[in-house]
Length: 174
Image (cartoon, rainbow, N blue to C red; front, side, top):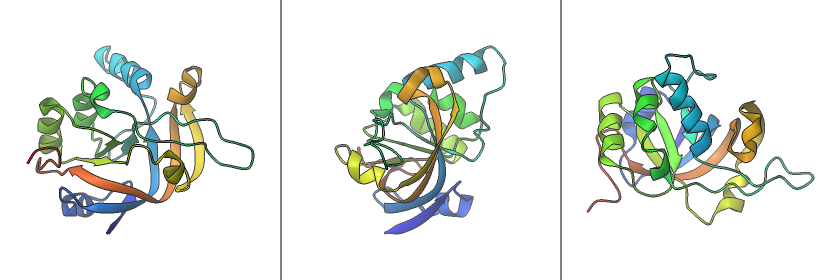
């Protein structure tokens, strides 16, 4: 089991190998399809993003509402392929870690290798377990998107697996 912190250091990022089990702590952003589309459109129009993505982590998630007394509701990963159209643009801006579930397209893998980034997966169906690792939630932007808005999570010992490392080694390819 490897321990890493977000934002990730280059040393930690390069130490991750395909198949490594990881416990992650620190801060990350959330964004799903609708938020990615807005970020992409801003970039296509030469506008500045509402967050500085350089060196950061994005978790593909839309959490369920929190019950009273809880920081967040269940928050399992979203299928990552839906962000494949947008991911290379964010990787080119310095995004270092993506978290979701499922395989990625070759365009994303090529961009990860070029930009020295990694793709971590969270176990689908473990939304309640993952929620226990989230200690704080702050709305950043796109409030109108509800659970698909961009949030900043503080996480502690979030259980993940390295699916694709910075060299392009891929858990989904044998």
